[in-house]
Length: 244
Image 1 (cartoon, rainbow, N blue to C red):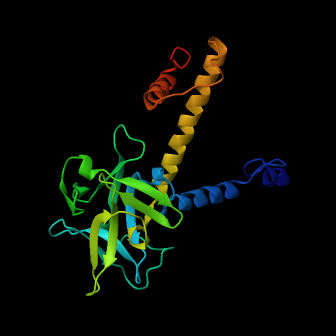
Image 2: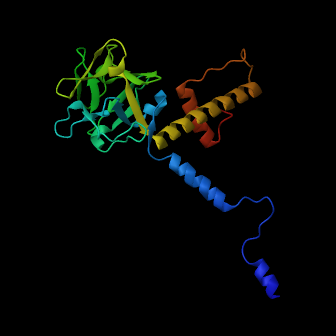
Image 3: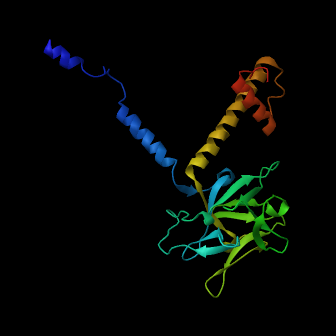
């Protein structure tokens, strides 16, 4: 009887069952992947908090002065490396957002809620609370980094000057070393953007399935707009996918 009591203690296990230890380890690994700052490599990565690094020696970053709201470039600690470089102050963090009605243009907001802007002469400011053409930027994704083009088709450029500081302007006509930025984003925001993209793809697949089932399959092609996808997502939540 005592042997039976000993054997029956604890949860029953069967051959082939996976242990919870491995599951916990996997969850821990996933949570680590969601933390920290990682390099942005596609446009969707620029939506949310971002950190713009200039690959100078030592590394520098774009920042907005907490005193007067001016925009500039300042050096980081000499020990900083691209791989582990992260913002240390809120003044170095900008928030990217898509421009309504555009697939390519974004806005960049400072910690104070003002927008990064460039006039037709290439002068950079961050003192406006609303978005107009001068507050719009088009990211140009390259293998070595990202360039930011303003509404006048000129690029944001950081040029080192004699006293060791930087001149920041947006009047460069081509992209070179001075116009290339290494951009980092928060891993958890990048993961969310990717999951949203997967959801949109799944909605498109469901739409195709419904058309094949209930309507004439028009040449084997379908094109959905952002508005269509939003309506379909809403209908799916309400249980009205077929009607939508």
